[in-house]
Length: 237
Image 1: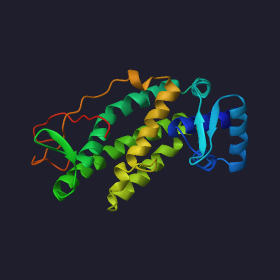
Image 2: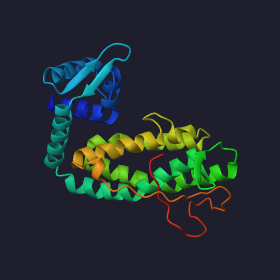
Image 3: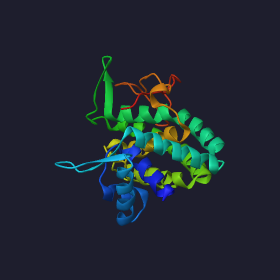
Image 4: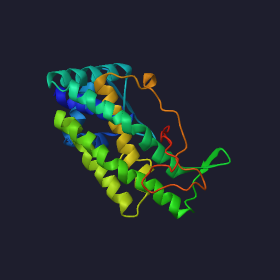
């Protein structure tokens, strides 16, 4: 029951607000079991249920603290803190580029201002997506290391691969669309998962300064490296 509770509290942390069926599917639990655990968590003041036009569960402050404590204790019991910390550092090394890829897909820099990308420049779009092709194998290495350290991380590699395959198959909306199934959505959940289990405050985490990686009219190689060799970093899109 403790594992079920920590799993559902984590899923609520990743989603902020969700109904029982969504949480059960994300946690790979039977809906009846998820409902039982959620009812018990509500009785303990760990979660609240919203009814009305929008129906679902949300964490209380106590639930956030309890969930993080359970996951931290589980990580230590598994002897996996060192491996997960190493993977987090590797994640951070890729994070700026992934966020920059998403930013460059959604916007273009014109006269110093970011404006929505109308995707009229097919060559530029191809260069942005080529950078995802370069990043993806490294992302899978991190996901694989995390899955080997703790089973909880086992879904991220397949989810990233599914999103990348959709992008490669001509469905680029799978890069940034507002869903946990997209590449960015999965990456965001993995990031939050790492912060929770390691007890890192997102507000205190270093945020990379944005440096434009593809400027309107730039001659940029599809490999993802600017011809001037400049760094590629970026804020969240």
